[in-house]
Image (cartoon, rainbow, N blue to C red; front, side, top):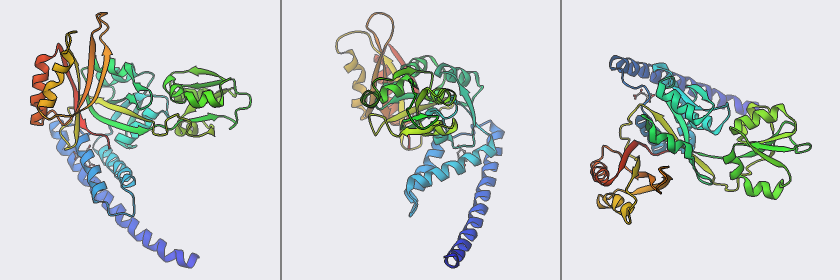
Length: 356
Ligand SMILES: O=C(O)C(=O)C[C@]1(C(=O)O)C=C[C@@H](O)C=C1
């Protein structure tokens, strides 16, 4: 066998030498880009450009590598090149191993400076204060719905949404010893407990469930306490030396969470974008219908519509609306101009590339 492997490995060595050379040529150009940007204080992270590069490689990819693997490789290449310009810092909900951390890596690659925060509020604060260049916060889960705290904070913040990330959420039940013997508590974030509710009712109805600050925190607790089982992603389990008792216990196998990238950056159009808004209208019959009419009139599709009580005690609501297209597209700008005229409250949260 070794006789056959040797020439093939020599081919791989020769190709790797070429890849390495090309990677460093790319990196030198990125350094030049960095110097040009430094002259004008231009932003290092350009989500629209990165989205175009990643879409481009998947479209041109002839195989046999699959498109999403090629994107993963190029995401890391861009991340490393970007870090030569400047290492971008990103605040997110810790501890290490949370799905938020996974979302950060999916958007920024691994060459980032992560800033772990104890709450969603703190992610906003760190980003607003400029301690971090960007923040990553969960917006909605396909099983459990909206993350209300994020929506409330988006209403008040001076930051914009500069990008979105969608990741599959797979939960596993994990313990230190790899069995459920002696386990008296199952800990996880309340969202994760809710996403695994039917499975837990069926398999472990007798064991107490305890909501904790995050799944990462649950994994940390399970690593310290042999009576605790954690529900978390397997990455968190690995970080804390846990073993999987049951994998993929979420009730919906297609469970996903969407995250928003928040920052001071107003992202330029990428060609496939979305705009997020918050609106409110006076509490009158037909008002919501009238408010949204300009979208249809200008041929702008609405992809999401969510309401939150305005907490005025008067049954008034804020409406969180996502529409297709970028604010710099004429039909979007015209529709929003009209919308604004009919709205009691109107705020554009940001225009950004659709998640890959
Ligand atoms: O095109 C740029 O603006 C770059 O800085 C280069 C590059 C890249 O490596 O391709 C790196 C960082 C940006 O977020 C986008 C792209």
